[in-house]
Image (cartoon, rainbow over all chains, first blue to last red; front, side):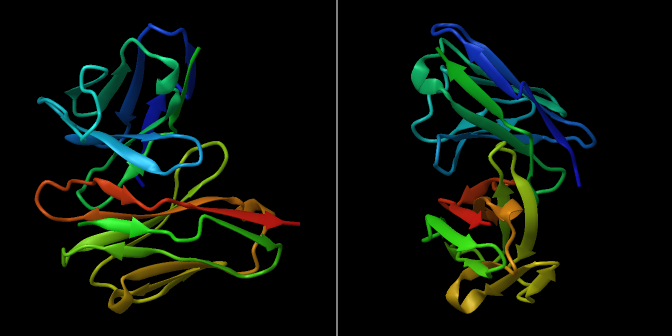
Length: 114
Length: 117
């Protein structure tokens, strides 16, 4: 199957700082990538759809100015959590696919804001 | 509306017991895909199976089997002779194939399976 790599696996940051998470497709090109968020003991919720060369599409209730998404190339999408606060602490995971009918996930990033 | 329901929040079994995880989905699309993922404590999502809406054949892979029934909109997952290593959260998910739905998944709430020795 296709490989998606996400970095970092975990990060601890101070309140008010920004954190960047990278999602890379290693062996295929992805015009679309997805960012999900998962709170403890909850399901995965789609945050946004990252589109190469254009603006991301955010789900209802997700602040686009807080969660900046940049899909600058066909193999890389980044999610930047700006001015992070403790309530942003969560598990973030990306997915991508070479086709429209599959989904391959990165390893996920556990963000803790202190 | 598209929706995936996993009614069982938590299941606890003793090793070697068989266990079935239920999944019911809702969609008006005729073409769609259903998935099961396993999420161990480390957090990564481990792909288990993908099934398209036109293939209702049941599948068996080792101790795992899946029962897809379009008549009841269900895609249930059975683990035979469960093992402690099967302990994890299991997610059922729906992927729509229509325009604008490029790989976006709708997840169920997840079922936490605990297999006791």
